[in-house]
Length: 308
Image 1 (cartoon, rainbow, N blue to C red):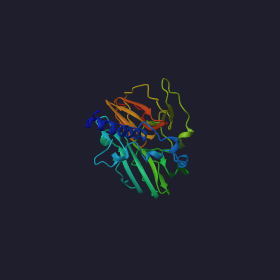
Image 2: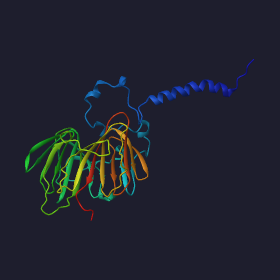
Image 3: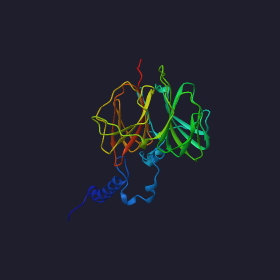
Image 4: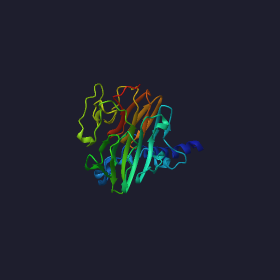
């Protein structure tokens, strides 16, 4: 009669169980996967644009609650600030508004980038003297009022550039309005001034990107008076930057949609909507889009000024 060892019995019974577990695990939504169409409900059709900025999904749920777990990284020449690390507190001089500073001069940047969560009856504060401001709406709606124009409503994907020393007020009556805000001391040039700009991403033309495959829109004029610009860059799944960039400009980035891999220096980071990145001058940088949906990010870049 044939004999069976304990090990062979374990192998016969455990192998099917292991294979079943692997099958289930691979079927779950992961970094490079998306839910199958059979489980997408009708609510997805009306999902607000950029909703993942405030509802990130990259970190598996069983890791999000691990004590001390974060994907955030801070180094000499770059930083990745992920949603689980954002610390919100009342914004100085703003009313009913919480803010999370993501980039600031303390890390070596010459600008600040922060999220402003406005609630009902929120009001903004005026920046310091000679400081210019750029706001971009990622959730809700805000109203911009200035002495030089009528009140203008800003919905999701709308933005405004406010020149230095221009009196203005940003208000919101929504339960939650989220803005990403950039501010910096304006580098003035003789006989040049900037103007108030209110627009939206879809009103900006696609620009040529020789040697690259991504789609590019610039939200501000490229003319000499403006000392920074904001780019909107779109990558389809599998697309990536051809140039492995190293340059003197600084960047502040907010990933609005999708997921991918960002190289910063000698480090490679998985990133998703809601992540923000600071890139110091001359840090090697490169991006590739992964997953099954478009990647879109908003990118600050200083321009039109001699680095001296």
